Length: 453
Image 1 (cartoon, rainbow, N blue to C red):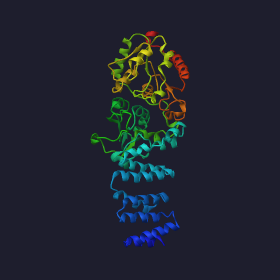
Image 2 (image 1 turned 135 degrees about the horizontal axis):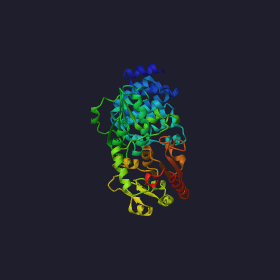
Image 3 (image 1 turned 180 degrees about the vertical axis):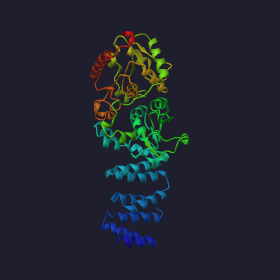
Image 4 (image 1 turned 135 degrees about the vertical axis):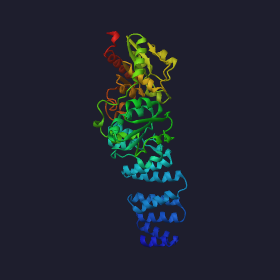
């Protein structure tokens, strides 16, 4: 029995004979992609698109380049009844391609699946974290494209940027993660803006709390913000009416996908790291307010995440470990901890100054102005570690964790995103206490404010 004879039965409407013929072919050759394509076409003829989906996936698994298979795949997509069924078809094909190492093709199909069912992003296996933490940027950034924080790209599924020439083009950059991630990946925006040139346009959709800071720091880009990341669900495309005021985007890219093309190696990172610009007028006002607090170095401190759980609390050094820092003389500590509690401030027992009129959660531009007026910042692993050094402020991060588990280091001893940031890791409280003693000594070596000279 040949494929041609089986196809002849199918075209003539002799479905029973066609079924027997295709099965006979598969009995002799179980890996015959054409026979599976025939069974898929037969299932469609019988009004069974769900069965056709399984058959065409098998055909494309055997031969990913099967032309007839791709044609039938498109037909099956048109026959499936629900978005979830379409998503599963795309997703199944993408996972098979991914397993075969055909990653670019897999990613294209995977993104089509997300358009119909964004929850499929939650299947991330987190392999990218291990790859990036080990310094394998090429494989790590590709694996990162399956991260579980992304959502459906909406109408932009077929406009993903894959390093095409951007001269004179409009590209929409979509921030899909938390505040800290937006600030970290903003490291790539100057390069993207340069690629577009003066005849094109970069449009950045970010968390609305970052709009003012980003607009000032990246004046050649359009900055818009309608989302508010709460750390619980992926940020997806929302109301896009505001885009009507700008040229139709030629390309679309997630903010976290930019490093794949713009930071493929450690050498591709700028030596100066990310740079933000605080509001000059507010910066002047904060400098005056800090002078009014009395003489001494003004050092900002942040000791934990805003949203603490029993699990996440394990990754922040206890305040008891900070005591060597708090014992420094000639220092006034500035509270940068959003949601700080009275018991915490009492435990610090230092000259801690809290500005109750500054909302450290919603007014990030105000927080940037305050931080820009400080002499130094010491923080746990929070978004402050990206904001403060990008403002040019000497900054230390002390994390209760293993260094090799922090993928943002990309296998280095420092963060390539902000190379001036001094970072320390330890798991045991005794080690953390010694680290803070070291940090306290380094703080005393900083240039003294004018009033102390």
